[in-house]
Amino acid sequence: MARKRILVTGGAGFIGSHLCRRLVADGHDVVCLDNYFTGTKDNVAPLLGSTNFELLRHDVTFPLYIEVDEIYNLACPASPIHYQFDPVQTTKTSVHGAINMLGLAKRTRAKIFQASTSEVYGDPDVHPQTETYRGNVNTIGPRACYDEGKRCAETLFFDYYRQHRLNIRVGRFFNTYGPRMRPDDGRVVSNFIVQALRGEPITIYGDGLQTRSFCFVDDLIEGIVRLMNAPDDVVGPMNLGNPTEFTIAELAQLVIELTGAKSKIIHMPLPEDDPMQRCPDIGFAKRALGWEPAIPLAQGIERTIAYFKTIV
Ligand code: NAD
Ligand code: UDP
Ligand code: UDP
Image (cartoon, rainbow, N blue to C red; front, top):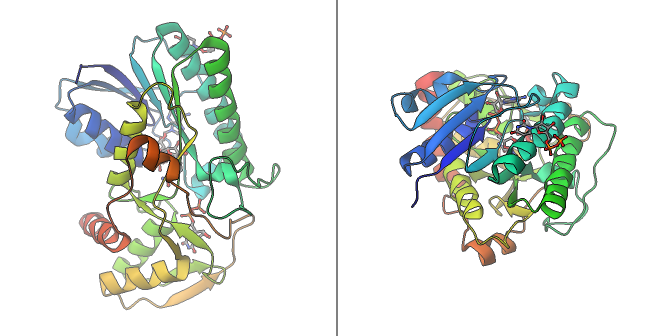
């Protein structure tokens, strides 16, 4: 594969750090951009010795002038507690960040990938979610800064695609988990594992009957790289996720079983606008990329538990 100069925004975050590792291993020149809002240098520490890897402290809401061949735009806090901490900044990151990275792509004629999300579907009334479903998002709720920011970013990507003939890719990631999630990330998989390992109560929000479909990060990375390298008529939006659906109560049971924890389960209030069900239809990714997740939940959770045992 030809060596490319690749920018990964949000590269010091959970998914970004796995993507950087993959691209460095593939022999590319990788610039990892991050403002360290939720990411850490520790996540990319093993890459720091590589001559084809460099770190750039920068906020995507400000312009950036460098020369690159490809951009993966992942900068944006993804956990509800983090993206709701400063919601105005979250929208700015998605919208101004997309404008700046698209401007950079336009000037350099770089191919550009947007990390979109299943949150563009909101609390879906179509199940499983196909890419043609237009979603059910509350425009003024606490999740809107993230959901609408990501929706607007998709709009910008497709306008630059039509208006400026940019080579774009849009992947809609569904819930992803794995090593290098922060212990205080706040998302369900890391919360449950950390609680179990510490012998603390497992906090189920609501009755636990809401569903999610969890994708192990290695599977997602393979899907992202395949979409970026697909023929130019495969632009997306494309769902990338694991179509096996679980209730949150089932996830809690699995984590208790696999950790052997004595934790009891407690129920806490369901956050406002928390989607009741989520499951991707990945037919498009299967047909266009020959991709589907290979790692079942129990196996991925075991690997994630092994990681958290080393840090909590
Ligand atoms: P994360 O919070 O671990 O990573 C986000 C990274 O972006 C962090 O390193 C953070 O410091 C950085 N960042 C935030 N604002 C920035 C800014 N203004 N300028 C520069 N850097 C900034 O989250 P993640 O789970 O790795 O998510 C990565 C991307 O994937 C995000 O765009 C997220 O919306 C998307 N996504 C993730 C999931 C998931 O389940 N993890 C699902 C759907 C979409
Ligand atoms: N931009 C950037 N790096 C570049 C080129 C542009 O950060 O290499 C930013 C620039 O600040 C601009 C945005 O991207 O505001 C959009 O650029 P575009 O050329 O599309 O729009 P214009 O400059 O005409 O507003
Ligand atoms: N959740 C939970 N306990 C927790 C954290 C989350 O029951 O400690 C629930 C949350 O209400 C939601 C689901 O787990 O229904 C997934 O939450 P997460 O924040 O991981 O992702 P998202 O809601 O963005 O899919």
